Image 1 (cartoon, rainbow over the protein chains, first blue to last red):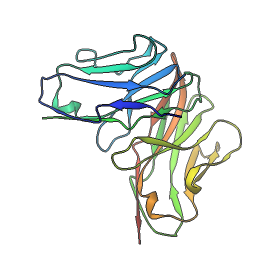
Image 2 (image 1 turned 90 degrees about the vertical axis):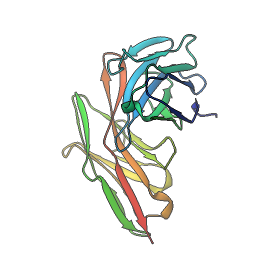
Image 3 (image 1 turned 45 degrees about the vertical axis):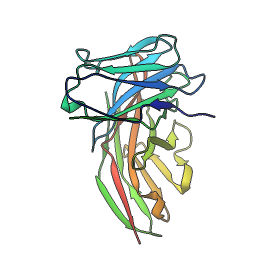
Length: 115
Length: 115
């Protein structure tokens, strides 16, 4: 079974530039998550989708971050304009449903460095 | 509200000796608990999970964890460490939000295994 796919794996951009990350979840998984992991910290949820609807985006900095999952399958996370503090690993994850206790599977992450 | 505390940021053991990574949780609900491992430059891999069945949970690579409600703990153990176990380990609690399943991560424990 294929896992959660993410691209690009690595990206270096200058501050104030924009960047987009793509995620393809495990086939059949209705719930998709984007997490931000800053070096030395645990991942923090940015946004959770159930099919193509947003379930939780309370910690997404909406002035610069946006995410979409138009057809309920793959998803794109965009940052515009980027700040130095956005340097982090962006992890995409998916689960069969959003039901409590479901296992969440993670991709290998997209590593962003803002200089 | 839910939270998880990993009591040690770094643990160092010798190869072949036991591993103990400590985790305490707080949850308003009967929680689901997970341990994930993250090797350098890799995504998060599920080691094991507890979802109100047996309190002693066995995972991959010889790891296991015991859920102790009276102590609100979910410590991860392994009888004999291997060099390949060197990684960062995250204790995670899953709880119900308005939108469903939400993971809250601990700050991680870096495990070092020495010859």
